[in-house]
Amino acid sequence: MIVITGGAGFIGSCLLKYLNDRGRDDILIVDNLNTSDKWKNLLGKNFIDYIPKFEFINFINEIEESNLIEAIFHLGACSSTTEKDMDYLYDNNYNFSKDLASFAIENDIKFIYASSAATYGMGENGFDDNEFNNLSPMNGYGYSKYLFDRWLVKMGLNSIFTGFKFFNVFGPNEYHKDGMTSMVYKSFQQITESGKVKLYKSNEDNLLDGEQKRDFIYVKDICEVMLEAFDKELPGIFNLGTGEANSWNKLVNNVFDALDLNSSIEYIEMPEYLSKQYQNFTQANMSKFRKAGFKTEFTSLKDSVNDYVQNYLMNGVKYL
View (cartoon, rainbow, N blue to C red):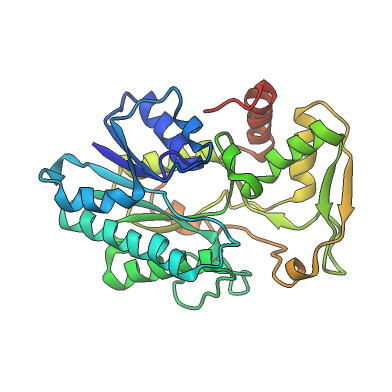
């Protein structure tokens, strides 16, 4: 049996589909569905059962045959960068992760989990996935992920488990994320509604509007990498981007191209509160990832955006 925490979420539900396509349906989904539309991500997919996250710790404490669990993909967390309740983030993202990791090590279960590039903060010290101390996350979410990474390293579990610092992930099944959806999805919506896309003006004199850059990675590539980690023994905590930074302008122009439309971008003032903590550049250093033996090749930004827009968004928000 395979456990996916966050299994009804964006990345977790896509991973579920990939496992189903391999013929695996012995999967236990752990999540908090509440009143969100996350349940729609599970339509058409096969799994044993769904357990609410708050009941799962009791489940693993009472389970008599833990050897039935082959692997835990721990993708569930509060990923809101605006969440201010640090007690909640500490308990949900840090303590819960420690409990799962402890259960996995005690029962010899493969453990693959999601960290985040938010651990790097502004990136003033670079994006080096060998560094776990001199980092300054900008928000509570990033700090909670940073704490768990550091705990694993301190316990020496990074030599056994596999973690990924996700950079800017986009793709199908993100539709429930409201304000946290990707700029590809937001661009498609804005183009549909108004024919143009709004981007923030640059907050640096030597940087043109819309030329702020991010390392965008397609969710399908994320799933391929996680399955590679599942198939092989590739322990460690790794960056997971493409290793190539692209501008917001390029991303949005690719959306217009996918729709076979001429680009129309309006640059608006960046709010002052955001300007003080805005990242103008992120790019994953992927050398450690490659040296560890990962072979997955990443889809180009253009091809990824084309696939997402033409095969999902243009078809009435189709799910993977």
